Image (cartoon, rainbow, N blue to C red; front, top):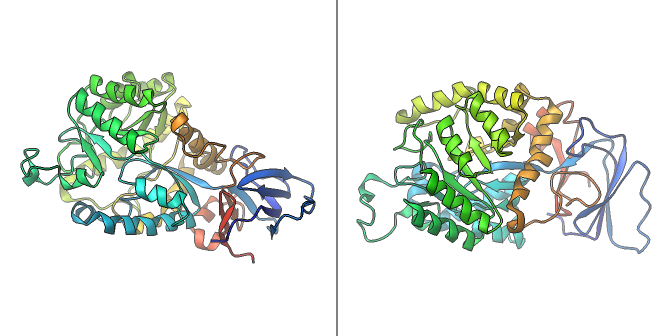
Length: 426
């Protein structure tokens, strides 16, 4: 990491600004005090006040916003599930800190957390103790008994049999809450700890052992209580859900962000649009990145893989607020494929559309946290006044988005908040 200076000047770069369909003509981009001050087709003059300045000659390379992963699990991405359920939380945090630096080096300068005990890591990153992306934390996932967040061992039932919470609850990975009072308590605890949005499990999942994929979780009253508690703090609820029944119930309760949704039908997707909610599916495919699951979960995974193509087709058809997130879990190799997962969206969208999803669109979703937003300002764009989270790409990702699948070779500079975390030009 390079220490921050007052100014950094990117000379002779073509700009993908996060919203346009093409890159600009050669330009200069001046960063001052962590914010983009000037984007100019004319050369920017030397600093009149003699302020320290780093100048990087882009040589016609493309400068673009830092990438944003809108469904990431910093604490769970690389550690196998069984290890997570038994490991000391200190060990989990050390691995997560190492992965945070790797995430940043892949060009992801911001992540929206979809559940996990990430408050300590966020604090360390924000304080500059470890390098990593900006983190929008959800805190512990709110799950009903037998829900997608209930990873307790069978011997940990009935609840409280050992006189204390289960390990997965004690480390802050999930809150198992049944009924409106318990849901309210769980949500308010996460807000107290610093959650920027709340994650609730509204339907069955693949990685969980007890719930079939088709089940609907939480009553509308329970979901609405979570929404009301989050709304009182000026923020919103995101839900894990795959099926029409689960998503429709969540939307009626006021949920603003639907995660996954690979089994949705046209009626439900239209309902997402009517409620002006967001949809964040993943390009899960039967390919080299197909996740490994226990034999008891293979049938659930196959249903999800079969639904991916239809889900993205419906998203395009209904023109909804679409986001992108990788949802990497329990797999160190798959975590390295974060950029490659993004590029798979070109199966359904143009490269510029994909880049927009992972920059300015995802930034809009993060900004739904309102007053709970820990990073006020414009993210995901290259324009005057925006936060200086920037990638210098050795090539044109609009013409060849696969460049982002190999960040080691193709990202020659990575800046977050005006600080260079990678620079191979000098």
